Length: 305
Image: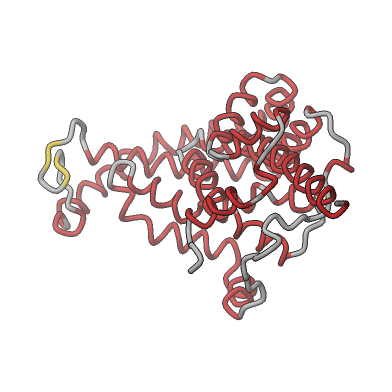
């Protein structure tokens, strides 16, 4: 009986002859064993590499300043009202939320829940205000951060090989063109799904940290897939090839996507992490491609025997 879940991925590494990597790939292979580490790498590189943070700031500074002014005015005008609304809501529905002024499910907590919930709610609103003013510019900053990260590795366009099946004997079965996928793509779309997830997760935002963690879990795979969009494009992969590639590494993608979505879900500063995550994703793609080169060389050597 074949293994499923993480065991299946572990078995892939054990049975794959390319897992016996040379010393030149030892560090990359070590990093590949724990994909969330690339999120940390992305943060470090963005904050320490002038070729990354200077162009990003130059592109986003005007939007940040305008958004900060509007966000400050919005905070002054609405914070008291929103806090009062939350106090009334929690007072009238403690059985639903399990929260009171200073307790959670009857346990004492070291801060005022009303203030915490109001700060989180307001932080998300200011984040959306900043996102509105940044809009196109932050997307450009992310694209440039990816390109600059790839360029810093000193690789040309021919570095990105065509898709190579890593599990050549028994590749996972995937179904790309399903009616649910078509329905989601045609009728729901990204904006509708974003609104639905936000509405469903609103009650959990009253619990310290719970809303952010749940949202990160739900968005993990989609976040990781989106962060590697440029990687798939560079390799000219088809939808089915992408699906197989992700399915083979779905726990890696979930782990990386969860860590990335967790940082991006933080109010206000999460926008900064959307850029650093693109840097980390580019570093991960570089290591994955180095491994693909080694797999290709190993397969070619086996065929020549």
